[in-house]
Amino acid sequence: MAADDAVSRSVPAPASSPTIASPQVGGLEVRSVTKSYGRRRVLTDVSFHVPAGRSLAVVGANGCGKSTLLKICAGLVSPDRGTVRVHGRLGYCPQEMGLDGFLTSEDHLAWFGRGRGLSRRAAVAEGSRVAAALDWSIPRRQQVRHLSGGTRQKLNVTTTMLSDPGVVLLDEPYQGFDHGSYLDFWGLVDQWCDEGRAVVVVTHLLHELNRVHDVLDLSRTEVD
Amino acid sequence: MRGLAVTAEMTIRDLLGRRTVVLLLVLVPLVFYAARRDDFQGQAVRFASLGLAWAVSTVALFATNSVRPLEPRLRLAGHGSVGLYLGRLTSTVGLGAVVAGLYAVLVALDQETVNPWSAVLALVASGTIAASLGLLVGAIVPRELEGMLVLITIVGLQMIIDPTKAVAEALPLWSTRELVGHAVDGVGDVDAAIAHWALYGVGMAVVALAITAFRLRRRRHVVYVDATVEPVVAAGRGVTRPVSGDRG
Image (cartoon, rainbow over all chains, first blue to last red; front, side, top):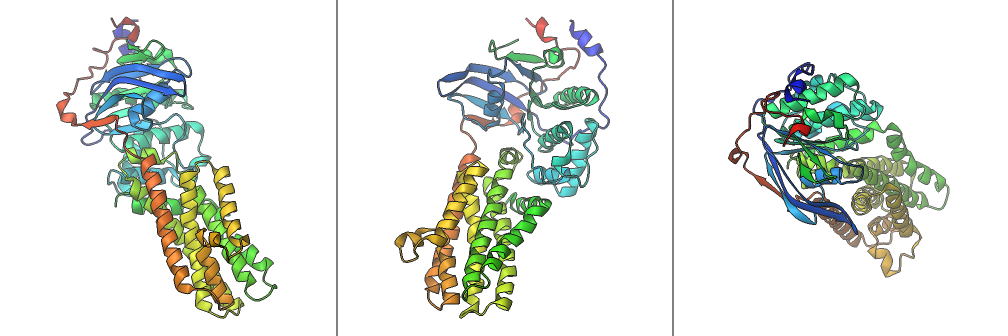
């Protein structure tokens, strides 16, 4: 498939632009990261660079260390060896729900937004713009535990973007998305790149690899 | 301190969202109190204090565990680990004090104690120390079931252990037992109890804060550098992006 074929693929424009006034310019450099759990080596000397404005898909078989690599990039897990250099703020969207089921979506937005100094109103307004791009209208009172899996994942993505990260780390963030939201998501990845962010997506959907600039296959540990 | 107020608010919102928990938080001490109300003088106060400690420490434990997956992301979003911990401490200690206040009123109206103010102090100490204890156990023991068993052991041990033994004084709820003794029987060292209350309350909070800060620390392998040194690459969507398989 040629590059232009990828362009011609119809990608719906986001319903509403989640553009942030002065988005973070990002970049990520991973150098010689090695990680073992006990005797099992999951990552061996992994290096890659995601400059500002580019996206990288991390692929590989189950258990090959994709999520571990993302956690190392986010600073949640220490590697045995190696460094991660980050330009801008980090945003991390985990595979498992990093949410509180007894709070509402707005509560989450207020809590995350406060980290950037946003008021509750400003955080909800900004979160609503990101949510709208995923074709989601944020419910006011519904607790997160009552939301569907796909909707919770949209909240996960929305809270990640509230901190205006320069580097966006997403671990299979589209699980449970309906088809329209799934396409919207990849449109958002394009938009985040256009804004100068560096985006890393862990994915197992190999037919979507044409949607990113680079691919890191951890089964082979080299960047295509 | 960034994040303290909003974390305290969200902790309270989380607990209020669990309506049954709020109901049980108030009812558990009442069950303990009612079960021993007809016993000899003061026994109901002891058991209300015990029920209060169990209920509040359990709530604090679950308040810690329910946000455990959320906290690393909140750190990345700009919150400080001190603010996150102190926000949770403030709200759970406040909650414990409020419930203790309700039982202080009940005891004042329903019980004849030798030193009524010691009874009030005992209940407030019980509610606040229990919050600090629950947060500490939650910080040390990441899983709820194990944490719950630890709490049952600590709180239960305080009630069944011989108070004359030195080990009784080493347990975190010794101050409440001493204060109840002063309230009901007129024996007990109030000053020592208050000192023990303050020492253990602050001590447990400091240890829990240190554990939380360590868990949420910035790892040394991640180096933040100035974004301006990295030129922005125009994404050129659809022009420069090749299909991965075509990249050489």
